Length: 188
Ligand code: GAR
Image (cartoon, rainbow, N blue to C red; front, side):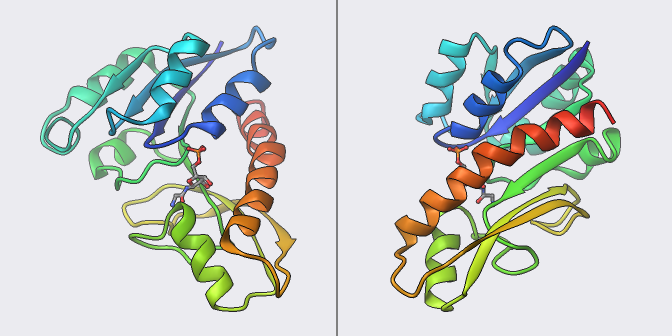
């Protein structure tokens, strides 16, 4: 049995898509969700998808071993950041080397770093008049958006595209590729 643990902060469409992708796969269990935002819609999705979840705060995440101990109990094969906005503590990265991945809604190293998430990224892409953007799936290290790239794919940005238009294209790429890339990593 391969176990996946999610970290998420927001809407949770990626959590839902990945969970549905593996729903009929008896070899994969979506074991747990950590969320740092009590109002995030991902918590509602987790409830509906029967994923156990925990709300974490800065103190429990950065100044205690609570999250690490919970993860050690689960013993996951992969930890997936799916729209998670906090930096992962070094202790967690050291405990799960090459087992923590993130999705970023742009072609890193462009448009990455602290504060570059969600709509901020798409607005920056449009403001820079980029002709293409895309998604990057990468290993997580101690710095925002700097770990080794696992997968990238692109989509065009038209001169008339708004940030919302770009977001819609990125959303489709994430839906199509993130579950497949996770599948490949788990069963490589
Ligand atoms: C996704 O587009 C993901 O790429 C992005 O947040 C969105 C979360 O959507 N992540 C980042 O910007 C990380 N820097 P979701 O909550 O609906 O899955």
